[in-house]
Amino acid sequence: MKQAMIFAAGLGTRLKPLTDTMPKALVPVGGQPLLWHVVMKLKQAGFERIVVNVHHFAGQIVDYLNANQNFGLDVRISDETAQLLETGGGIKRALPLFCPDSPILIHNVDILSNAPLSALYDTVARQHDAADATDALLLVSPRNTKRYLLFNDAMRLQGWTNIETGKVILSPNLDDHRALSKLAFSGIHVLSPRVFSLFQEMPERFGIIDFYLKFCQQCAFMGMEQDDLHLLDVGKLDSLEQAEQFVKNS
Image (cartoon, rainbow, N blue to C red):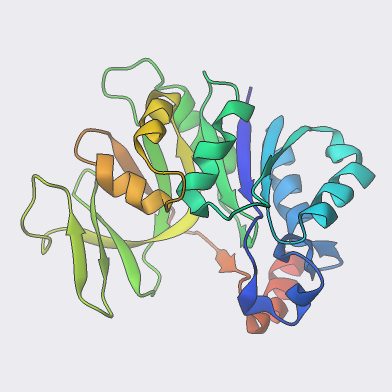
């Protein structure tokens, strides 16, 4: 069974004043909420179970899903109304809602893309029992940003850097990052069940990149670069017009 998690709990502060009265997940683009676009993309890719985490205006998201009969899917809610748990903590909280033997595709609710979700998922799923299996697959691209993941020639994650501050975090077996490739994370990734137990070693609240950096020496966290990737982060008001065009042309 293909399963996915949609991060929909964020406050959406960059989309104010729209998010003063609704969650970011329900901000409309092309006549439909952002959540609809991600759910439909997942459904078309063959995903059957979807976990949606909620916090900001959580009831509106639950009501929207109920009103649409969960779009014919097994949709489950991971409730973070008491406290936002960030991306890593959100996954840790949601793990009991998933099948423990299948990978999980993670997708931000404010990302529109042409990413091959089924192919990404299947790459991890078919390697499940192999000795050299991929423990996580991160969709990345060479776009301009402040923060980059660092990969070696085999596209295995080795670290992270913020080029604005100069901060670098490397795998403990490395002391030099100059030969590593800098690639931007898309917010779309697939976790193998091989690493689910490692989440118990993390605190309640943490970012998923912290998880990847903590275990990248012992786990095969791999990057996948898609040459023709079209990806739009609908996180700010000025990106809504671009999002309308993106939806119209896709």
